[in-house]
Amino acid sequence: MSAGSGPGSPGLIFALGVPPCTTPAGLSLAVGRPGLSLRPRPKGRGFRLLNVIPAIVASDHEAAAIASRDGAAAEAVADRFDIPAAYEGYDTLLADGSLDAVYVPLPNGLHAEWTRRAADAGLHVLCEKPLTGSAPETGAVFDYCEDRGVVMMEALMYRFHPLTERASAVVSEELGEVRSVTSTFTFRMPDGADDVRLDPDLEGGSVLDVGTYPVNAARLFLGEPDRVYATTHDARDCGVDTEMAGVLAYDSGASARVQSGFETPLTQYHRVETTDGWLRADPTFDVDVDGPTSLTYAVDGREVTETFDPADHYRLEVEHFADAIERGETPRIDREESVAHARVLDALFESADEGRAVPVEN
Image (tube, rainbow, N blue to C red):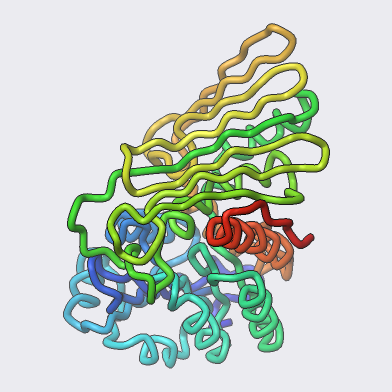
């Protein structure tokens, strides 16, 4: 950890990597206040960038540097957000000895490589979801980071929003046995889009982009499934799934229906059915950081709506990650959670490929 980031220090120094909208070239941004460095990847490219950088700046930490394969692009972002250092090339950023952690927001197929390189540089890593394209590789990346003494966390920002935390508490503490979950995240990608999420060489596709959220939510409310069944469709003949529909099945008879896609208008919600009621949050996952959110639940015929003040789940995620490092604690999204999540995604892909239900290794 850099000077000034020990006990009692005001924060951590972050480095971030942010790819442009249409190419895998990418940017890498370092964020800093004495403490930690990180590396981000925007979800629709520029969209995530405009959320993550302000989130770090608004926290007790500081955006210290940004890098790109295009030096001019890095400088432009640095100028816009008053980031002190801009680098051409990710390796150059990793050689900056003043950083503590990186946020890896590059295309999916580059996550594992640059997480390992950051760990080699002694930097803690917040890596955008999915950490890797498979459960075995996810476990291997955790091993790599643990061997080098750095903290690694997969970024699932929605888990840190008060809406999600309250939904989890209501389901576990106020409602009865969960019997079914329905969860969806879709949006319409423009026709003819030149987007890395449509590139099979970079592990694109709707499942690994927006599909991770409904699958994660189903697991949050129901736990680990015993088997899954899925169908996928490539509506753009691009080599990746642009639509997915899946079922997570449990030996108890409970089930979850999950859906992701790039072909239909923006929809993001989850609904939980229990023996004595239900809960629904719409929208959820990637909500407006400047707007209120709400959930509604019913139990034994009584219906309740709860509204939450605006909350920046990106900032809450960054602060949780930094706190875990400073306190020597295990992050909320830890090795067990990330590997279990990847196992379900692996099984969904296998089911879609083979046209049959696939057991999930637990």
